[in-house]
Image (tube, rainbow, N blue to C red; front, top):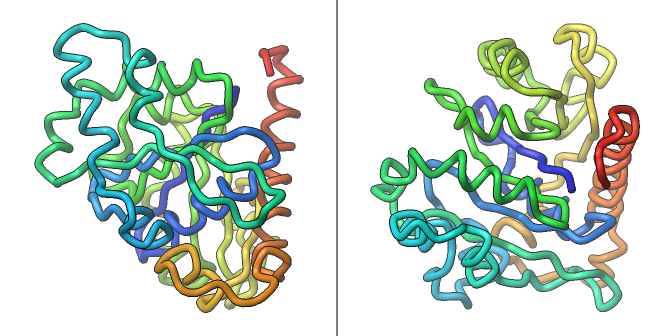
Length: 255
């Protein structure tokens, strides 16, 4: 199925919260992967409220590589299930990230194997890659991804940072697009698309209070699953999934 990488050019636009929200509203089976190379374990501490010990995840894949075992033989044991937003929603899988910063450097040579394994899975995979950084994203991720989504706010400061990183990323990736947080604050979709000559795949409102349910594990308001914020997440998920389907049908790839 499809491999989607989400990243930001800085200024903390809410990439992890956005990736989590998309996974929880994705229209078909999906796996969310925390591949942020600045480990924070935000999903474990926030949405899951620290109820999982954090022992599973990317760090447990390194022994398999050293022992020359296939990653797909061990990956399923490291995946946990995210609580759905409603009783009728399908649960999403989640692969936690690095347990400590020192693990990131050790993982350097493992990116190609991990990316190939994720790309071959039967469900769609959303990868939270965090900030791009001076060294860029892991090349295996950007080259293998069906879509690289850059999450950004629409302020001048955020867009200035985006301008620094988007050109190089667009040269590496098959397809890139933007996901706007807070369109019209102050720049809108049409203005951003024109300035960057790229597509805006989806938009989400800047909604701190409802987003805190995902980012900080804040108590859910009544009818949260039917709130405007979650409806916007569903719309964004459907738009991105539809874009992936259209691309794959165009090139004749398997679905």
